[in-house]
Amino acid sequence: QLQLVESGGGLVQSGGSLTLSCKISGFNMASYGIGWFRQAPGTEREGVLCISTDDSNTNAADSVKGRFTIFRDHNENTVTLQMNNLQPEDTGVYYCAGERYAYVCALLAEKYTYWGQGTPVTVSS
Image (cartoon, rainbow, N blue to C red):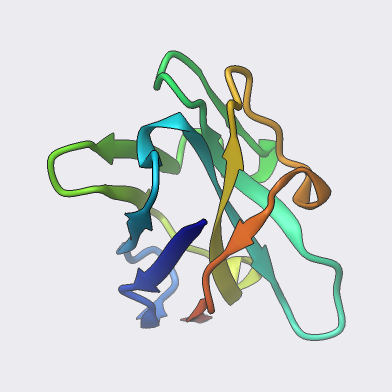
């Protein structure tokens, strides 16, 4: 079982930055790849960025390449999503999720077993 808790969402102006944190707890945490997803009202949940189980690879959606980065701190058991140059289309609820033994992580929601409750991000123009 894995528990994930997101934090750091809020309101920011276009061009601004936010740092989202996913705090992870549970059994055998190091065996999980972690993905960040987002969902805007009336849309499907989409993958944003993920990091593999052994931190050897990441995968980013084209829409966020060059603006968002992901990194894991094993001492703090957190996975951080750093978001720069935010745009109104980045608005949505952001979720982190865990997939066990994800040595190549994927931005497919159906592959992830455990989910956090989400944190809202609003980017004003």
